[in-house]
Length: 320
Figure 1 (cartoon, rainbow, N blue to C red):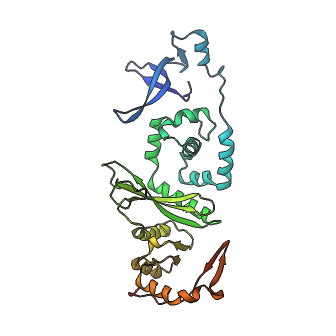
Figure 2: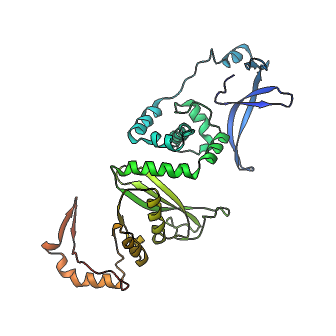
């Protein structure tokens, strides 16, 4: 008997293999894990491997278990949309090179998350009823095993291939968000600047994504105590390891520090960065040119936005 979605097999000590149907999935708050309710529908013939329906089933119920006479329907709508997106972005091609043995499962789970936004522990039912690249069962246990098999080498290979692909027609943006947590076991959970204003420790999630496409490129988990200004060095190292093409970095004032500017200059990195106006030397420059800045010479139009600016070259050093 071929394994079907929603059916599980249990082998008893005497060698008999019983087949159970999963009739319900639920969360066990005490054991903190996903569990399911199963009903025995029969056992396997030891010689042919075919299902012998349980005597508790009536004739029509037993016949419905025979794959040869059972019709199966699946929802194809999401697949038509997601498959088109996949072809346009080349996502599966990059995943197939990075995870050749499991890319179909990964894409199927990505479709499930895109279609529902729910936790992976509930993916089995949705994937079983919808058209996906992977036709086998994706039970909670199999998903856990899949995630354990996804090596760091595979992830970095994917980030490298995917990043180069997105960079061809897009600009990259880098941002950090915070996720508050009550966890006392996660080593990344630390007290720091909470962007949501919650009085909780947090994990920082740093993400690089395409400006036009909004496609995520790569990510890093950071301790919640790490400020934006301290994360730039790690970002540059990651770009170097992933062999991203030469980039012109555009950053807000949260990344400004003398240490960061020195590092960018030493590595020959092209960049544009906002500078906090609270700095003494910045205030002096603003006050010096404030009166003449709003004349015709300072007029600039960038897209639909009108700006009045003044440009002046300054030397960089310790006094900055």
